[in-house]
Image (cartoon, rainbow, N blue to C red; front, side, top):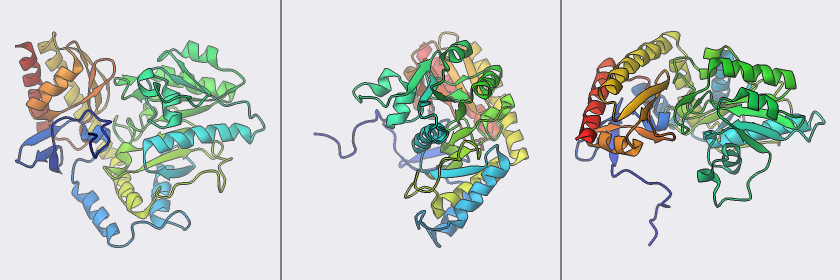
Length: 390
């Protein structure tokens, strides 16, 4: 008999009743140090008191009105995002998947309204993950995402990861956009080199193609800058954001320049829930916190501490780990042992991690994790690795 919850997840045998900062707690009081943060969503930790206060205050006033009306909370968050980024305009969604759908539509509508409707092709990289909608799985192209769900949405081509020359050769007069994650998350915490991001920006400038960045997982302070592309000194034309922007509340956004968004006029896109007062009130508080220079400096400092300790962990367990990669507090342990063995052994030590492709274990702790918690986390990972060596 099928479960009342559609069985599309291979869930761990864990169930939590509440959270406290970097910790999750089961009904029996067992505490787990959370290095997954809801797959990078709980950027400010669990039950963050500042977010809880904002959520409670807004819940007592207004939850939802729909986008038939002006929404001051939505305007405030859009203004904050525009002031802090390359963007001139923002559309709010409920998820990264919805953000992908709009980014694809925006790029294609751009060329349609420029009287070049043949420019529909969007180039992506192998190993990408852009959500599980029809556009998202077609963009990624991996068989594990697409098998059984054909016919796929046409107009996407995947190229070898980081192969800029292949990208350059693939651009034609039908290319609408290039879509890339500055750091692949599901793909195994694979950062794109700054030089490659610069080269992609230059390629798009040369050909007119739009540069779309997927910062759903690597954005909102995760790498020690507000957005990961800032490290390369470039700007996209369109950017997808979600996960950390709501601090745990379902919220996403598409940020764009005025040029890229010019064709998106009334009636071309919409969302019933997107940008509701509740979500945007929380998002505005998240934005206020994570965009602060001192906060981002602390993320960078803690990232250096974590990486240093992980290097020691790897050196002590050469039969379990081969390296670490990533930026900021978005790191991947490259495993020699099966990565799910490491994840499960970590559960036994009451520390939560997230598997990824390329035999990697993702570490995406809350950006508010403390130095002591970093030390405790690595000690527990050390115990997990030791248990696998026995």
